[in-house]
Length: 115
Length: 112
Figure: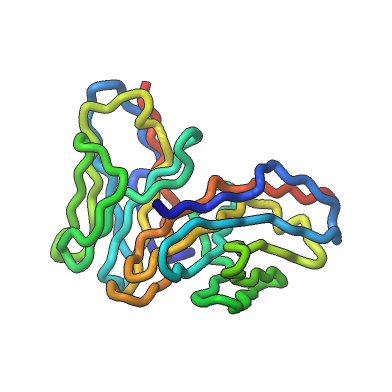
C-alpha cells in the first residue's frame, strides 16, 4: 500500500458527461501528479500541483482540469467525455517539489470507461 | 522532446531464467532514470533508480546501470520467479523537473 488513495476505483459513464476523480496523497506529501494510462498513448503525465498551485502541465486536454485543495487532496475533472478518454487515471504524490527528484508514490488508479 | 523506448513485449520466461528488458532514452541534459513495476490491479511501484551516469540501481535482485554513452538503462535479473510476473516501465525525469516520461511498458510472464 503506497498510502495514496483514489476514488472511485471504477467509473462507467456516457459520452458528453462530466466526471470527477479524487486523490488523497500520502500524509505529508505536498505534490500531487496526475497520469493517464491508455492502450494507444501509454502512460502520460497530465498535470502537477504543489501545495495548492499548478506546477507543471503535460498533455492535458482543455476539457480536463484539476485542482488541489487546502487539505492537499486533488481532483481531476473530465468534461465532454469522448470514447477515447477511456483509460486508467493514476494519481501520484511526493514530498517535495524542487530541483532534485523525489520518489513518486502511485495510487491504485481509477478506471474510466466511456460508453 | 524527451522519450523512452522499451523492448516490445510480451516476454515469457521460465522460472530461474535470466531476464533482460532493454530501455533506451532520448533526453537533453542529465535525466534521472527509473524502473517501475505494475502488478495486476495495482498502481506503479518504484523498483529502482539511478540519478547520474554509471550509477547502478538495484532492488529485489533486479539491477540497471545508467549508461550515458549508449543512452540506455537495461533491466536485468539473474534468476526470475513466478512472482516477478508484472508490467515493467522504464522512465526518466528531466533535469530540473519532476514529471516522469514513461516507456510503453513490457509485460513479463514467468512460468513455473
